[in-house]
Image (tube, rainbow, N blue to C red; front, side, top):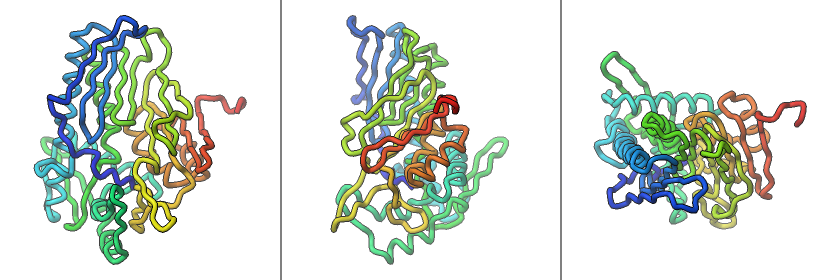
Length: 336
């Protein structure tokens, strides 16, 4: 489970908004917007009429505000926070929240036990910024309240309801919601006429229409040892590229590495030979939903798993020696 503990906790503010008009020397004539949301920098790029592009970007920013107010477990009136504070009672939730939770439960079920959105009782014990390791007794007690099966969803005709049966369990969708949001942003802004669109939610990239010259976007694969460096690139015109890696949050203590991807059965960091994995597919919700699982499974089992999932087009695994291991379904098997 990815301890993305601050991924959905900051509401974007108007003063964070930056819109940059396309420059004359940009061959693709991209307008660009940047703002802060989901504890990261969000970037939109698109070509077209300046006013139309800015209006679509503003609609995307407003949607991010709405989603963060629904999905953040740190905002007291969000749907997720209300479920976590319900002490086992049923909670009426927005349909968008229902959709995110339903998708999240699906990835939990498919994850070989490596992803669980009810890990809140465990993730709150870890502090990867200050290098704090919880004691075993606290971990054992917290793990007893983990289990995605504890969350029940009801989609009624007029109302959606969530029930978390264990009063001590806690939901965190920080490791699954951004992919869902990226897909929604693509749908929203393309419905407003944008034809060549790039969305980046702090590493969750979704694109539509390729570049204006007909070529695909080129999305970099980060070096797990140095996130400022690029090992390679993925070409994609429509779809998503999502990276999950140990480099995002980790620390060393007494010669041992502690990374932020936790095992739901033990509450401890997973043991894996993967430093990072990049997942490519038609939908960002799938790419993010499977990325943590692939990272936790390790290279051998992870590659087999990626081959078995039709939602995954390409998966790039980077090992501890910075060697890439690739599953690429776009290449005919006879030429591999």
